[in-house]
Amino acid sequence: MTDSSLTSSVGSNRVKRGLAEMLKGGVIMDVVNADQARIAEDAGAVAVMALERVPADIRSQGGVARMSDPDLIDGIRAAVSIPVMAKARIGHFVEAQVLQALDVDYIDESEVLSPADYVNHIDKWNFTIPFVCGATNLGEALRRINEGAAMIRSKGEAGTGDVSEATKHIRKILGEIRALSSLAPDELYVAAKELQAPYELVAEIAETGKLPVVLFTAGGVATPADAAMMMQLGADGVFVGSGVFKSGDPVKRAAAIVKATTFYDDPQVVAEASRGLGEAMVGINVSDLAAPHRLSERGW
Ligand SMILES: O=C(CO)[C@H](O)[C@H](O)COP(=O)(O)O
Image (tube, rainbow, N blue to C red):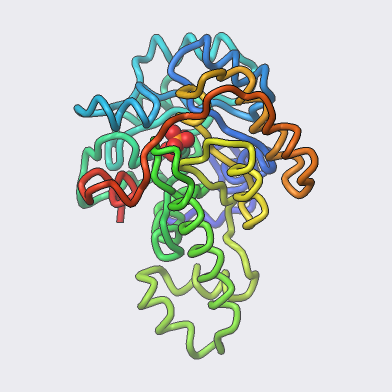
């Protein structure tokens, strides 16, 4: 059931979406343990995302990727004062129940983990805790919002260090929003059908020219310039994982990416932030990935 409440009670849309509003302009960093979480907080990350392995390791090691061990999540929560998010598998509503019981601040129903259900996503209205979900296009974003997502991140191709898919997805979502705004009211019914999204949400976006929730970008961001580019393209903020912790100097790189995200429209600052960072994540070109290895194709 859709919660269109404008009240600010626990679990209301306003509270769930409002937390993401407070993270705007910032970097959310993937971390697997308390030490990494401290590095992220010291670098100025606005939140951390707890997961079992960073996406580059999930990609290279293979196997089923699941929610983190609760002890690790507790350790991360104890180590930092910024919000702690954690990932659940697509459709795995019990992992989400566990994460809610652990009192994390946000759940990411993430394609980076192995899906638990290839048909249904989690019914996110059933939870008081807010969810963020990935999307490659506007229709996918609206389906997730219709299920109760309170924040969207464009997916990119996590764990590659190649920003090209992140570029493609943020451009696609924002381009489709612009296109909707130019339609006549009587054209919105077909637009909703083509987007495979609810008419009410489509009509709202055509009128406001933006999503009703915060839109971050993710997947493949590995340098300060990558992060600044996502912000210049119109993202509200950036998720970074492998790009920091698979680089030669995570401490320096984490701080540099935060700085470049903040001062994204000042090339001098981005240039300074890009100096002396040591080795960047080696990565893999998205064009070299065979289809089954595209994490962004999980979720629909
Ligand atoms: O799924 C995510 C967002 O919740 C990851 O944080 C993001 O995709 C990380 O990708 P990368 O490791 O390429 O930075």
